[in-house]
Length: 299
Image (cartoon, rainbow, N blue to C red; front, side):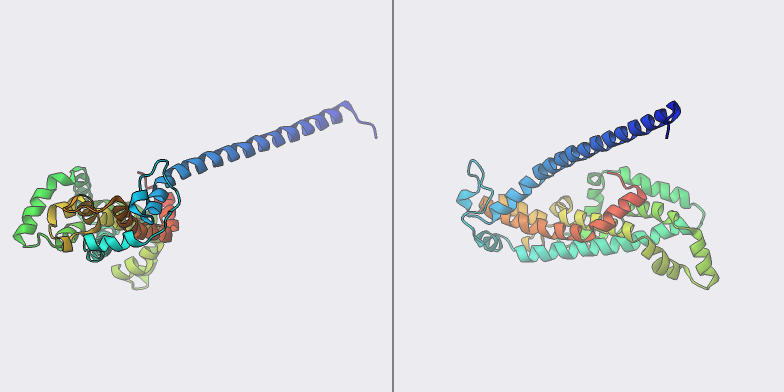
């Protein structure tokens, strides 16, 4: 078979294309390796303080701040976790934080879902203006409204009770805004089909729209639980009795109160505070990432 100049030119172009493609794949491969190494290094740098905190909580107090720092809990002990309960009523404060986080999360999501459904699916006069007014409230700092809220709670006799914290948290403007943007992404044809079959607003919302909005609800649940669990400003203003305090305020009392605890004991308390939050995030991390991808939640 005679190879003509045209055939040879085509073969040369094909060979050159294969070489270039292989080179691009090799560059892309090495680029992925470098990126992976950089991400691993940054991840280890971010996890190192948390690991050191947890490791130190399992060692004796005299070894807490050695130079260079010890990355293994030697000698190993659980005594720091036992001592936490001797300095503060940690068990009661833990239950207070759990109760507050669950009530704030469930309550605020319930009210937010109902309000968002009204704004997204029910047309009524002034809905847009009302939503704009509610969103403008997000620009008001919490420190600016804490005084009228405190006066209101004092009038109701709720100061130094958990009700002073979860009652104002039932109305969450951010959650209403977030769900008001999420629900319109669901086709209205679903509502119309359900209405033809005789379904009411309650059935449409709780049996159809909410299951489809699962990732968004999970993301808001994580954010609400985290905000309630780590909240410090509100408990600082409204709570004064140690048995009524939540964990963040209890940690401050443990560290700076009368007869402050050693550093290793404080680290053990912080470990017990952080652990439930990590467990909640690990359980719902897929739903959280899916919600961020589908609704465009940005920090």
